Length: 462
Ligand code: H79
Image (cartoon, rainbow, N blue to C red; front, top):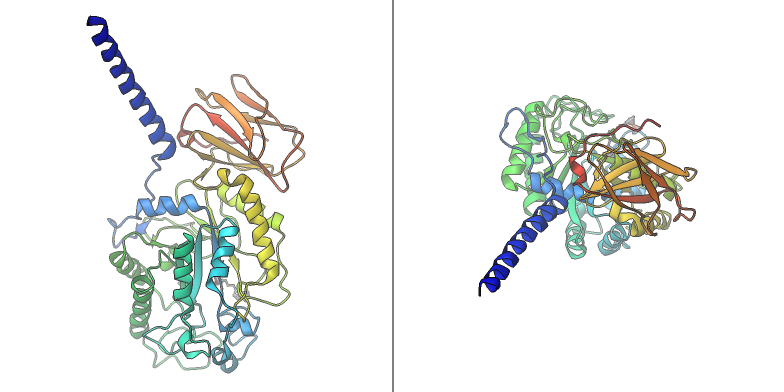
């Protein structure tokens, strides 16, 4: 009896210990306690913080598709900016009367995003030219007034839902066509009769349509820098949206505190916004404030015939460098006036997707670091793994300093086998395998004895 009881008792204790250990390992590696994001409603609403869960899920995605599209595709010039520049205003503003993208299939766009390894999608609902891509209650300068008439935004929203892609919307604060927007660009109409309070009501109403009628999850503002928009306006708009839907994410261009192209150089607490937006460049390493680089596959945001496209290697390296600095990448394509994404761009994205098939483990759900990026490599981490993305094929050995108490359990090559390594008191030395997967980068996974997010930044001396 006694032995039986002590047997049961010991098994019970062992079980509890196992459970506790398993739980703590699981909770550390699967649900790391990221520090709460510092963004939110700005100084007017200091208690309105970024929704931490939504931010974490979006950061886990790392890679999204940006689309710039509208009647301007008929012209092949830049969206918004070419109005009154390369294209006379009367011509630009009449393009919508011929906009009839008969070969548009939302499903094809979103399937492509998925095949490219993208996890979210952001579409221009209204650019600086003022054209609304959905049937808006508040304007006739919209998709409903084109020969095409179809609600392409709804079709995109539903396709995203179907394919499990997070749906988001770009919306320009500045509007060079609206009569009541009070800054003009290449436009001779007098501003005297314009009234920003009327424009603001229009803007808030349209944004409400995007949130309530289309359930957008990301509001990606732009064009906040002109004098017509104020810091106060930005904070109000941020609060208005979060009151409609708490788990929405709003970029920092809602508020004019940020220099738009710099991304996040100013104090974040003062200004509204959940993430920084470096444009056409890769953001710097930053583990404190979430950010997303937006970068075009070609040279123009909107479609341009024979646009000079980046190579798939360049795009993959751009993605790696972005995540190595702890950012997301929003990669832009500009579909054609007939509604299709150009086959050249489709091929490029699929090649990025093929690289991610092999190396996605080192991308999705990761954060940048702990080793700071250099010209040869960047690192990411997740759970008890550190991923080393090596961009230089000529390295024969990779030497990484090991912080005190960190022990290496295994090193392996993604898409390959275990890799030989040695450690001493200070360093891990990895022998680079002879056979490497396809260029432009391979990824090594280092399993360690602790949750990797606990490690401080480590600077490499080479
Ligand atoms: O929507 C995309 C751009 O149209 C928008 N932001 C991204 C996401 C954007 N707004 N401002 N800018 C980009 C920077 C403006 C650059 C300019 Fe130029 C330089 C405007 C005029 C000179 C180059 C030449 C771009 C347009 C004309």
